[in-house]
Amino acid sequence: MANMTGTYIRTKEKNYEDFLSMLGVSFVLRKAATWSMWTIPTMEITKTGNKWKIITRTILKSVEMNFELGVPFGDISIDGHKYKTTVTMDGDNKLITDAVTTQKGKKSIKVVREFTDKGINVQMICGDVVSKQFFKR
Image (cartoon, rainbow, N blue to C red; front, side, top):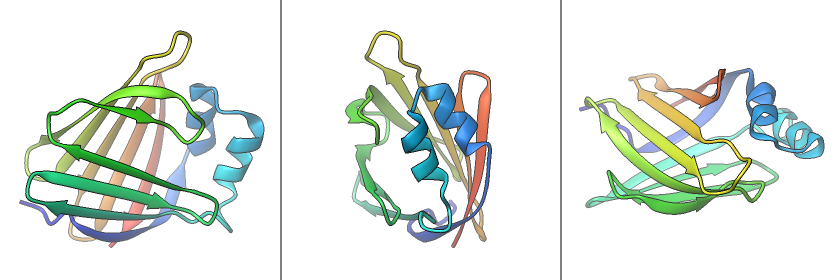
């Protein structure tokens, strides 16, 4: 099993603004989120027993996700969209987050975090838009 816990820093991103636009995030929030000079995200992943915690931090905002694998929970995005979210494990090195919208006119999200010895390859998928990011260990 890959070591998933630890602290990571984002070193690469592609199509993040397109992903946010597909979600319907406002222009101002998209620009704030992609202003990478000031918002270089870090991701901290911890696990205690069956409980996981993923905290993604930028200089502007932090988002915390607490979950147990396979157990649906209510979640709210940075811009206030509501989701019913479930995180599962695929093999021994992938966490897959399925966030299904609970609001009419909003879009669902899938996030695949693939862990390697060097870090995490992250794919954020909304419709036909895929944003790829890499977080270094």
